[in-house]
Image 1 (spheres, one colour):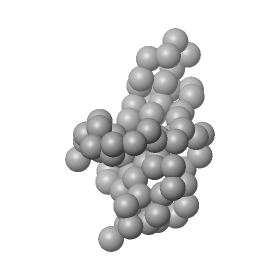
Image 2 (cartoon, one colour):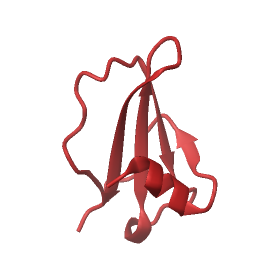
Image 3 (cartoon, rainbow, N blue to C red):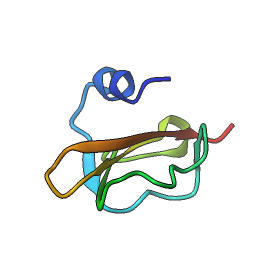
Image 4 (cartoon, rainbow, N blue to C red):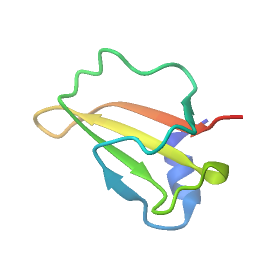
Length: 76
């Protein structure tokens, strides 16, 4: 699973937020713990329904370098 491919294939502009949407998403490998990033942004579909929901969490450090990425998909 690729967070970049998920965003590329989405075909619309995702919404950016500081919080994860709803509770229908599940991470594949567990939430990253030591990301090395002090800031995070979450990209999601603007109208996320659980059936086609996803979220991409991106952590960045103080100089704007991406330090971690987490892809969350709908729960089965």
